[in-house]
Image 1 (spheres, rainbow, N blue to C red):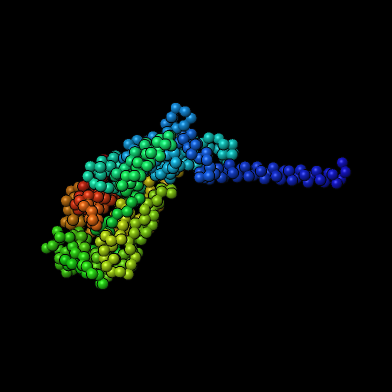
Image 2: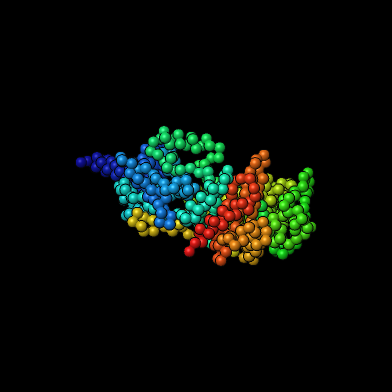
Length: 484
């Protein structure tokens, strides 16, 4: 060939090789690195068609399968749930359209596409080799979860929830909610049936698909006084410090006074000044309204609430977030006073209030709640442990000890004294009025067991009556956890 033709052919070959290399690189990138993103894209029309062609791994707790896949008779698998209404806040659902709970948090581990389940190397992913789905081990205690669900269901409450945290690790041992739903109903392979089930559940006024334990907000009533008391300790008070009390307190600029409960008339709350521990044990509204409005004031209470997690959506599994609890940041003394007794604009999830109690048990440290213990490969080998993570320090060690003393006083001689001798060592009752309603938000937060307290509990029941009526439920749950 002539030199000019040789050079032209050489350039052509070079360009061809470069283009081939670029094509291979693009294929490698797309299949190796973008496969997950493309598969999950809402623009991928095959996404929903392929959902049930995967034999997803199980969700387990205490060796019990809570969710698993079952062959449907064709190439598809149907998701099944054990005692669906009991464990729905934990597992969530896996439907034709979407997934929630642990089904969402560990979606790619369960369907085998998580990198932690790669059996060889990148070539496996490029060649499209099937990687079996893994097992997700939840932190919940199966027996205690059942006890909690049964107790909440039997309470005659409009809505109810219970949360128990391992105070030292943040592991969620109980996450229960009523009214609830059965994930088996919405996990059908039939799109029309799934749509009908969702429409029926969404039409119910109490929203059973919405987990009351972590994703719905309620006024916490006097349980919020634990946060206000923590702010007072931060400002220099001790449990023995004399604090303002009295039968009535009118915040500066307010048109209406805040009063103690009628049952407190003639008791220690009537006195002008009493020790902080006594005001806490007897739940004197006037004391904590004064603290929120004047000393230590709104800013101090707001800052302390934030240290416990208020203002944030708490992530307790990958991508699974709680509703954000809140305390009003305001210059209006009346609003701050009302919020400081857990009414007005103050709202919280049971998960958040369990975190408040947990900090007292855990030397003042708030651990990040977590719902997953570990991830295991199909053969049983652990490929990832979910380690405890510290979120913040809400109290010093000394302040935490004083908070425990105050919460123990509630049970020994205060509003929670009917719990003496139960599994509950310390706690705080709370009753929040709901304007125009015949029911109250009845709260109890606390810790136990008595001999070696390691669990923090929060129980909410929505019914006529007072917060102490949620106490026996908390005691039953903690007793179930502390069994030999």
